[in-house]
Image (cartoon, rainbow, N blue to C red; front, side):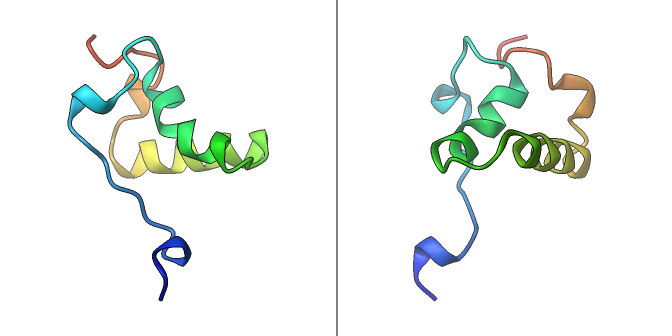
Length: 64
C-alpha cells in the first residue's frame, strides 16, 4: 500500500509542535492542510484525544 493511502502519521517530540497553538490545534494541523471539513476535524480530534486520554488538555499549549 502506498504511504499516502495508509492513513497514518508520525508524532514527533515536542520540538515539532507549534508552541503558540493548543493541543487541539496541533492535532488538527494535518487535517486542515488536507482540507478536511471542520466538523470532521473536530470529530477526529476529539476521538484521538479520548483514545490518548488527552481530552482534558486540548485547550492547553504544549508547554503548559
